[in-house]
Length: 409
Image (cartoon, rainbow, N blue to C red):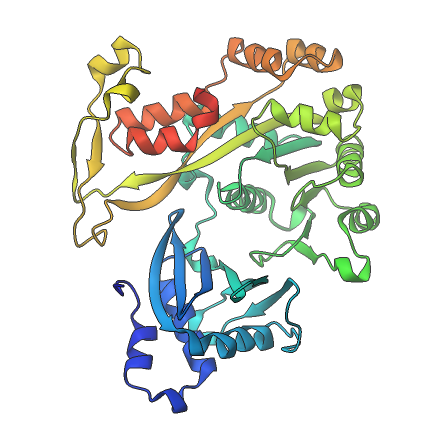
């Protein structure tokens, strides 16, 4: 087994006798290594005689280190202590939050511990404000989508929804939207958020953290929040019918509501909300825009070179596209640690409901018909935006295919 990416972790264990290992220090080094790699998640998993530590970077898991299994219990115990989780709680899933040491900046952690046959697996979500830029210009929006999004943010009321899988950039886009509102209005606007968890503390926002174990849920928080005189309300996620209903009602009573919701597509958001029991006429009156998002890996600018995709993929593209295409991919170099990629960027689609679409929602038309109406109105799909990035040499055809495969099939 090769140890490729770890720095502090390997060095510490290499020069420290097993009996003298300080597990607070060791866990800090694991976190430092992950943060320096730009990791979003850390996986610590027992496998036989080995403890495997992997870090998700740009959407892909990379091995950070392989440690002897005897470190497992103490590492697990240390992360439980950091999250105020009793160390004797074994065999049941537990979750917690923690802050890192000051040397790591304002990084916060969301820790999930899950029991396996071989022991407890730890997954840590890393929230590092310094690694994110909350600027609409850096999100990868096309000029058209950027202008549409800003126009929606300027509305006095309505419901703006962002959809996409976990890790598709929704939260970053929402914080960028809130930052834009603050930049435009300063202290003349009242913005309140209800989040689970608060990922990025921001000035000029009234941010609230859910406490489900105390009964402080999204519906409870939102009902009370409406008495706090907010102009803009950000809801971390619409998960259930009660939250959806309050979000819709708030948007109809003079509040701009921004939230995320999991759905297969932008038009699928309507289906999801209808299945939650929201009346069609309420959706037609409240929803002013739906933004679908994905992230694709960018080719390394130092080693990107022309290449030829597989023939079965090429067949999916029109001839006129192929004639103008120059496919590129990163070959791997020191700059990108021989991975061929450097960072990620968004591909997006913006659905602005028109009269025809609202009529179709009122009639509860199937999702396929809603999609066709949106396309007829000029919506550029995730697939089309992704192909434009491919043709510009920014990313590989294969990466776009794997990211938006549901839009292609």
